[in-house]
Image 1 (cartoon, rainbow, N blue to C red):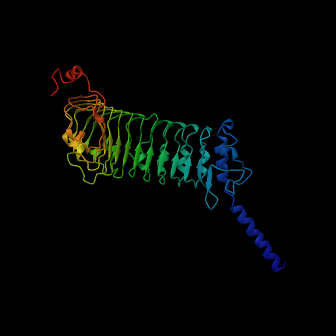
Image 2 (cartoon, rainbow, N blue to C red):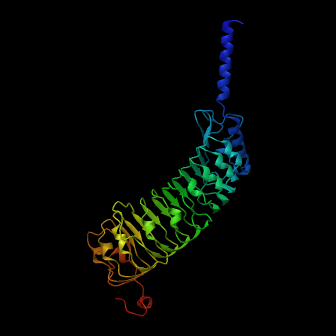
Image 3 (cartoon, helix red, strand yellow):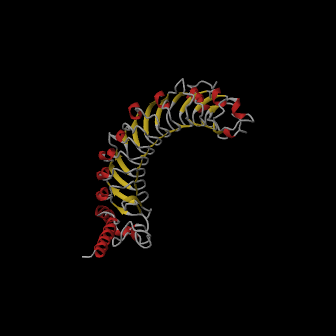
Length: 382
């Protein structure tokens, strides 16, 4: 065979080899086929992303004119790295074979009709950073195996029917954002991931008191959203001493007492606190006024009594203040009604005297004299 013919054959071999390598591996193809097969065909509109998934062509080939026009992205090495569905109302289960997409970085199925359990096989996705299953009907408990996802940064399973969390949640050491809101979780929160920035578990059936063990070591936690649960007892000082805390929303629970630290870090970034619609008794905590950046405070519809602390009216950073729906008495501090005040909110539905109706803060009327006398044991308001 001549040297020139040998060169031609070698070139053709390299060309065919490169062509084979440009196609995603069979494991990716199998995973995508199984993923689509687990979804009811009647729920796949022709115009949707899945409606264009035709496996007679390479899912990663570009340009995508007629097939695989959306729903997935591939790496330069033709591995599927992102599966992000459109909200077309897809109905079905999540195939366990999704675990074959071993290079997957993002799995986003939000706002569809997926149901059934979250597959434990997701633990075989070592590169997964973003798992978004919100606004579906997934049920059961989060599989304990998922806590082995050491690359996971964001987990959003809100608006599902999830009823349990693994005790090993703290093993998600890279997790920064966790949204568990609008599910069927009960009991207490487990020990949380140590590098968490944002926690949301609104509108579940969480109960019991806030456990220090759940939040231990969360030095980077900035946002806590636990409203609309059944938490009760005392919010202890340790909670407000979490060093990076910025926003707290624990409204619509059954807390009965709140303890604010007497000494606050002057570098505290706490800007917003909402403890409205609880059952908190006692006097308004004066020490809220010493948080240097606090700008929004809601303690509305609790069982607070006594006067409004003068310190609240002197706090320059405070822009929103809701104290309505309590049993506060006396005269509100005059500082709330000066020309230079910029505080909005409400002091209504209390037992206050001399709350000027010319002020937006006093638009809501006060409680009747009889209710206030009853609240204070038949004694007139001071």
